[in-house]
Length: 219
Length: 189
Image (tube, rainbow over all chains, first blue to last red; front, side, top):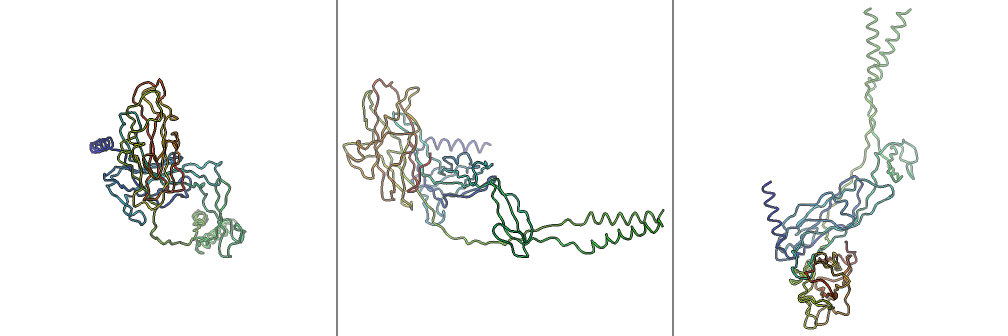
């Protein structure tokens, strides 16, 4: 607790003395598909072209704000943190997560949620004269394409029409549905547990013997 | 009596055996797919503000009833502006710049409307560029400035403020936001 308070105090003191800081963002995607109810996390790289280290963390803009599941802790981005030209190498990598809990039926068949992700650090004190504080940001656009959740796969049997085609003779047709009325089909081998023949014969024989003895005694 | 019990026992065992027979089980066999990991070049954008812009946009010596008052770093009519943004050298895409303000300049309950606050932008600068004649009023949603700039180009800016007659004295402040996005993308409020 004490350590956290000290960190916060140092962090706030650091921020209050900052001028407008500008950071860099590296990204590998601008669009991700996600199923409602599932958390999706996306990695971004943060760079710092300035001469001063900066504490920063990923934050969101636009409609994505409402679906941000978790943002990373502020992290020190060293001065002159440069992009190395491959994947997110050279940058401080952070992960931001999103969760769309429910899928409204009126958004069928897919819900597009737009916004942006940016490294948040820039903050300045008041200008103390008439004028404007300045905040700058670099933004990675992001669109979440949210799909409704699917039901479990269930078998509709062998030899039936499986979507547009029939499954091979040794496979069953499986189907799953979603709230938008969409169906997906696939053929699959379904392994059924084999019941040992002895487990059928012995009970049946037992019943037969029992009934036989019962009627014999009745006679 | 013993025989009856034996018969009942056999029948009970048989019924119980049937009831506890293993339930039919299903296991869907699906094939596994493998993927190949490869290196990808990410989009990377970083911008830097000029030292003067980092400290804010300041208007000194304002008077009521005056128009087009220069911000302190404008150097309008005398030299290039001290307000600029550039793209860092490791940025690997061209960028578009946007600008907005969070609301009117305020001093307590007094305000100067954003319609009195202007900016102009250009990729070059001298005593007359960016030009007053190209000024645009700030708004609270992002407006695009120059687009498609690479990491050798700067975005130069100037700012002007009208102070209406009868404006109450005070220190008026707001916040100006700059945003850089990959060329062709929309800025995000």
